[in-house]
Image (tube, rainbow, N blue to C red):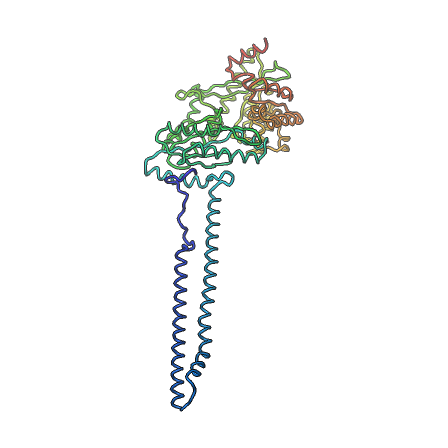
Length: 549
């Protein structure tokens, strides 16, 4: 942290059972030594007194016996007999005290070393070893204290997450040592760009967190811009300046929540939206307590949307490089909400997938697309359309038989129907997915693995799948020009697919340079804004006519 904050102290109370404090222990040791000295002093006095008594007794005894022994001789015998005892009694405590003092010094030194080790272990447990910033464990503990203090005082504060973009590629292309150096510089730049009272922590691998007091939301925007500016500073690594940027998400207490988990969740959601927005974006979470009800409304509202005509399909062309006159498209769902307007798919599809509504939505989508294909066939236009399948559909018994029945009902050629399944969806239950895909392939429909390269499928399993097409994930295509590693991944994927007898579609093609590289790599089909934006059914017919002209 930059500086200690109210409610965010790093100090800890002494733990129960911990060794007593040094002054208390030293005071007890001093009292013990004093008592030993007093006891030995009393013994010395007793020995001297006993010797004196014996001396007097001998004098009296000699006098009564008429002895002529000299007093000096009598005294010397007493000193000789009691002196050794006296010397031993004086030396013994001195030796004991020397041993005790030495042992006490050793114990004191051991306690100092123990406390230093405990302090070092506490620091290492709660701080990131690379950047020396507080780690997530300490951040969450302090954030809990911060929330408790803010509830009492009524103050507001922001919780910001900054997730570095393309950091994985820095590690891949420049090496992990350079990557670590970049993280150290980024951490220092963020700390230097903020106020001393603002708290900075390393939240995760390439994610940093900031906690800062604010009065108005405009202050939150200023702080977020400061973080953004700090990240934009050139970093001198590997003898050349390097710049990084980040997707920044912000949640505000108590607007977006009054407990730690909710604030972290909303800030994380804002980061996801910022990354989707691109261009080094900052997104402020607008979620509040009503967000859960709004999500529930989206889930239940999809059924009404199907019945009331609020859903529609658009079609994005896939250009086949070897035969441009072949017309293939990917169908994409659009929800025109009566209150919220056009909703992005990633806003509601993940929610709907958690319920059985996804089955109804899939059936609606397939029938709508088949109806469009039938209408176009009646006009003499034959096209192939790819339909995205959810993970839940792969668990649905009877889906392949239903598809076969629908194809027959609409009088379609199965070869003009294609289903796309993501690599991650297949791997969730690989054996179950394999059985469903085999049944679909038996009907004669085409099968594609979507977003290939971001999942965890093995080559051995890939060779077992009855697919005839791979779609390279757009994240690799978009960064081909910038990163050699991504270009190598795309080239290797195309070669692998061709070796397995599969065709390849490159998603996310946005410019001529990308298209030229993919053509050189002998990619089979291109899809993206460079080819065409998604089209309505009417626009689709116009596009086909323009391609034929």
